[in-house]
Image 1 (spheres, rainbow, N blue to C red):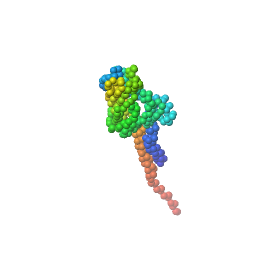
Image 2 (cartoon, rainbow, N blue to C red):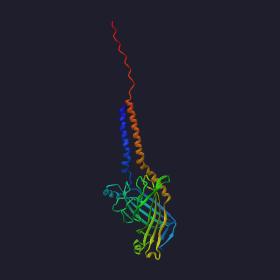
Image 3 (cartoon, one colour):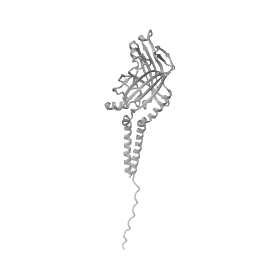
Image 4 (cartoon, rainbow, N blue to C red):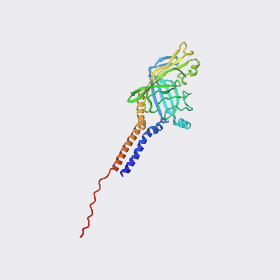
Amino acid sequence: MRRKASLILLAFAVFCTAMSPLMRWYAFPRLAKIPPSQYQEAVLEAKNPTLLDYGTMRAKKIDKVTIVQTLKGNVEASERIEKSADRDVVVWDALSYIQDGDGKMVSKVPERYIFDAHSQEPVHATGEMVDGDPVKREGIEFKWPFLTEKRDYEYFDAQARITRPIHYKGTQTFRGVEVYYFEQTIPWTKVPFPKTMPVKGITPESLAESGTTRWYTTVRKFWVDPTTGAPVYGEEIQKNELRGGTLLGDRDKVTVFAGHVKMREDYIKDTVDLVKSQRVLVLLMTSYLPWGFLGLGLFLLALSLWLEARGRRPGDPRATPAPEPEPVNA
């Protein structure tokens, strides 16, 4: 019985030991993915920024500018693209809605971001766009890959429609979460006008006809949870200018927007709580279960060898039978 039990334990030990690398290197890359129906909202604010009044074409200081960013998973579009791409695809319909302190719309820029659900690499398909203009993204946007590494990544800038490195700057602790800090600088770059302008009568076409161009620069900062690849916090120090053309009169340039954009405090808390809950699921497949299976496998192997050794130990010596009495001769 001991030998049979030891063989059963040995089989379970082999199974658990084999499951350890399979869970980490086979199951995790296939099971960890962004759900196609995910919805996320973030609100960012710039306190005391400079903003252009298109009515007077003069820049002035205001109380604040608010940016509402939404990411909405388009399940129908992702299922359609998956058929031709032969991979799990997520389609995010994003919108950046910008308003001043009085709640008046400054601009709104829609995006469609298509990417691989597992690796977050961009997937090029019909419908990929920024503000109605077709684009072909390279690099990541909005989210880093699962198990983010301590290295630079290529990051897509939607305003400039270009991809530039975003640099790993070190490891920090943010609200109790160990994060990687990344920073990207986009130098002064000529960019398109938003399709939606805040004042009637002023359109991207009329601005272009006047010879006026729009220029943009930013320093982009992200604090990223390396387990999930999700940013827990972000900031931008951004400037926009109009340059040249008859619209500006004798001025060479005028500020459209200049401010330090930060995530609003209530959304920081919600984002950190969400990331903390999601990282447990990733750690389950990358750490807890693999190490648990390995530890259980080693324990069962040791128990199997112990039972086998006991089964082979010699038993107690048999008692010597008493000699039969010999017949007595008469």
